[in-house]
Length: 551
Image (cartoon, rainbow, N blue to C red):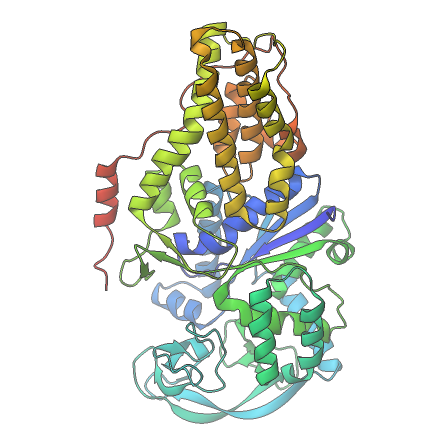
């Protein structure tokens, strides 16, 4: 394992609140992974930034009577607060509109331009006579020329994931009128020139998902198109060339460069050489499947275009979209749950547990279902994990005044239980390193289930031979669980840690510590009380009724 890592997530667009769909695929898996790496002694930093530029922000800020800068500052602060409430523990959260990012983006562009990867071209662009403006991609909708899906943006088909050369049957998404075509001059990035080097990178990158690599390689084989990287709007990173006044970079040109500029700002401010660290670390970019094209083609090509001055990603963990009650999330139809709203109902750890449980390391879509949430929390988190911890610690308090007893020689069941603890860290590590977080959490629940059965089999309440061994091993299993759970359920794991009567913060524990029998005889436990509270079905019905009307 590399002892340095930089972790990023797709940047949240500073144009509205964070909802469950945002955190499921990118922020939560990145946070769990970062916590795991840190517990393994990796100098890991999780950095992110709000994505501040683009026409939607310009238009929405005008509607609210704010400057774009004021508008994005509001959402940057609000998003960070919501992430923090969900225990997404960024080491640094910045913004694409920072002076550092603007300067960095302009510098990368100049290098690409000097190396011959940029050219200027007069193009015909959609223009809305009704709104009297050139229409950026997000303001033209139509039919995808590749898969024929309707109601798609002209810069990304959400159905097939490709970037259309030109959308069919275009309409202005502001007013619905059919736009005209007018001449304007834009700058282009020679993406076509990178076909061979991108194919080589994909062939040689061992840690990228095979299924994603395969269809990106097919895109390359079918022919890449050069990429229009500028727009005619006043809100964005200005193009630093004479004669380019009034032009800014397209958001997808500048926003993923903020991964690098944000990391450099954070590391350099800490007195660490940011560039050197970046190039010697494992680089993780956590994304959703809708932005594969950008992260597997645009992002690496731009880094290749500046001679890999900043190394390409080692991992791009890509997951599917979250649906809600089996329907597509839609803010406009009120078919969504805001993160802030959810955390007013239930603790962050309930949502973290559920979303990791249902989220495989694949591009398969996942579904948030209120009834399934209730079942998993009540039967798995509470009925299995919470029940075991409460039984083990509660019985020790009641029968032994909270003092762990001296052990006798182990019988076969005791030895099996001891071995489970000793193998626990290794059993989980491979799954965590391979980003199978759902499987790792399932393994933790299987460990808890084993010890529930062990406790039941030993019947310590009968005070027969072997009672002390059962209590000793069960308390140590609870300790192992608290450490294993920390990346997933940081608040609950700390509560277990404190009930065990252990000092300090659990995040100071190393991952391998869970496989030690770290609680000795005569250790005194803290106060035991239930870690979790049951989810009531009557409350769930209220939450369901707040959705909609659905389609």
